[in-house]
Each structure stands twice: as structure tokens, then as C-alpha cells.
Length: 77
Image (cartoon, rainbow, N blue to C red; front, side, top):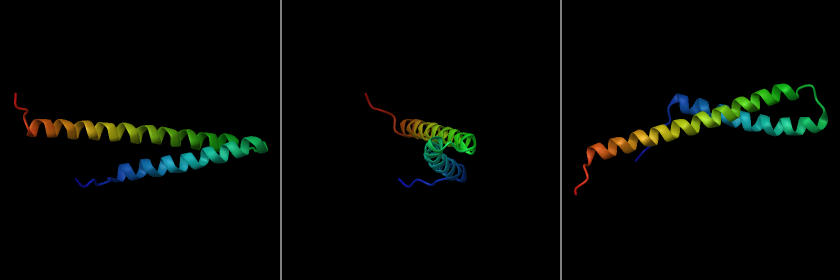
């Protein structure tokens, strides 16, 4: 089975990666006492939201494929 990533998937992956990197920078800046800390915290939070949306999308796609497979091959009793 070949999986094709759609533009929405790529966007969520990019948001998640940028957010994870921003979280690491925010941790570093919290020790430095920088004024940029709220900005990186906000970007990191958006990245975590992107991770969550990506996981929910993957679960929804997997569930829909499972329903399609079940309807195509009826189980014998």
C-alpha cells in the first residue's frame, strides 16, 4: 500500500517541526532571560497543536481505511 501525503499533511509536519525547534529555543531562552521568550513559547505552542492535529488526522485516515477494507471484504461466519 502506497501512502501519498497531501499538502495539508506537509503543512502540519512543517508546523510541528518548527514548533518543536521553537520549544527547544524557548527552553534555552528561559535560562538566558531573553525578551523573545513569549514569541518562541507561542510558536512552540502552535507546533504542539500542529502535532496533535497531525495525529488526529492520521487516526481518522486509518479509521476510514479500516471501514473501507471491512466493507469490501465481508466476514464469513
